[in-house]
Image 1 (spheres, rainbow, N blue to C red):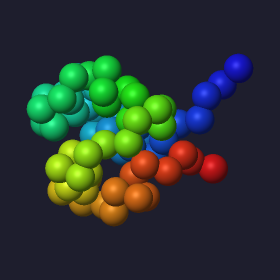
Image 2: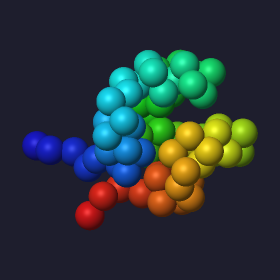
Image 3: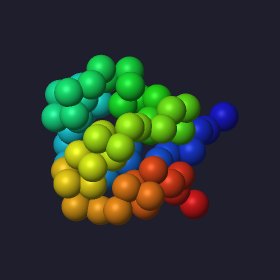
Length: 67
């Protein structure tokens, strides 16, 4: 069984970042990044702003699963 990949995960991997790398940039735990990527949790407004700045994308786009 395959799982859906979020745009966030795709964009993170394009940059060669691990979940830990992204977590360090966001000052959160890697497990939190995993939960965001899998759609289990919604990031706070502060984390959303950081994601938008890091990836230079709208956060709504980043958090969508890929078709």
